[in-house]
Amino acid sequence: MKKIFFSLVATMLAAVLLPTAACAQTINGDLNHSGKLEVSDVTRLISNYLTGTAETITGVVAPFGTDNGCILGTWYKSPTESLAFNSDGTTDYAVGYTYEFLPQGYILLYNTNGTLVHLERIIKATADSLTLLPLSSITPICYSAKQPVRITLSDASLSLQPDDYVRLTATVEPSDAGTVTWSSSDESVATVMNGIVLAVAEGTAIITAEVAGMAATCTVTVDTHEFVDLGLPSGLKWATMNIGASSPEDYGDYFAWGETMPKTTYNWKTYKHCNGSYNTLVKYNNSGGYGTVDNKIVLDLSDDAANQNWGGAWRMPTDSEWTELRTECTWTLTTQNGVRGYKVVSKTNSNSIFLPLAGYRNDTSLLTAGSYGWYWSSSLYGVSPDRAWYVSLNSSGAGRDYSLRYYGRSVRPVCK
Image 1: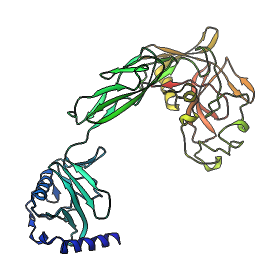
Image 2 (image 1 turned 30 degrees about the vertical axis):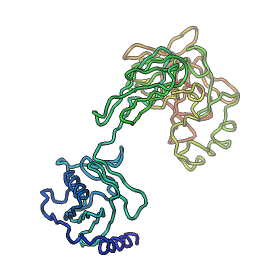
Image 3 (image 1 turned 180 degrees about the vertical axis):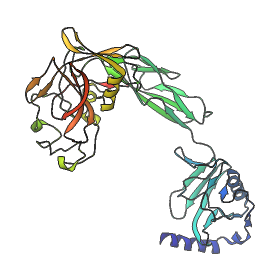
Image 4 (image 1 turned 90 degrees about the vertical axis):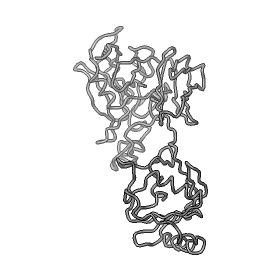
């Protein structure tokens, strides 16, 4: 109905308001690229509009339709919208449509049956831009021959310690858009010069890279929690101790999966994300037989014990990140300062961390301390969502397993 209405409106306007349509110049067949419009065609049509010349091109579809998103060639609507092009620099549309560009600023589009199906009006035009108002809308659409500038940074967030430094790389499109300028929101926390960020003191600073009026940012968190770069392919850094610990050998606190505070009793009745039993889950559930389904399979930061206790970019490792640690490092059962645990040594740079065999908590008891270590991941065990993935440490080595979410287990933070 809407299309018919606007067809009628367009027909009336063409008949009453646009008498020069009959005098429009026809270039049917003059294009060597049948069914396609090139940038030069659009540029010429804009010039025709500015000089009051009418022109009709048949056998192609108008490049100005709102459904298409943009004009063609090097024409852009926004930093995220542009057309896909053929190898010859043209764009295919619905071959056979007729596009009529009138000096009054109206754009008419006819289908293969000769029916007027779309009408827009130019409300502003320059040599390199065009602003259209579809008669079916109150929102103008502006197109430009100039590629919009985009800038991205190599990292969106960083976690550093005082005196650490790292280089941020800015990628700019187009590459000749201009010189990138750098700034820090708080130089008492972190400074930046030509992309090199230097951590100064504890706190958070926003590093901004700007070019041609466009900007990209990186949140830099500087804290005193120590971490080790193990040279992992992911670039992930591992903390030197557990949450709640005061040294690498200290067991630290114990957390139910998805809870952020230690407690005295660990069971379904005290578990935060259920109504007292395994089949009454209220969060992190992908199966109707276990309670409310939300299909969340990785902990939100608000439920991440590492993030909520240490802040910044700290979080719990995912199941796949634990797997990376197991495969990219050598694990040796040892005793460090009187505490049994695993020394985890990088195969790349020989840096290491220590994971104590801290045991776990069930109800009010601490079990298997000194014999086993149980470290949560942030990943749900989707096959049975009352359980989550963890890493199990014992005399046989480090293994991947899953268990009930209410158990109290250790948390070792990671960051990038």
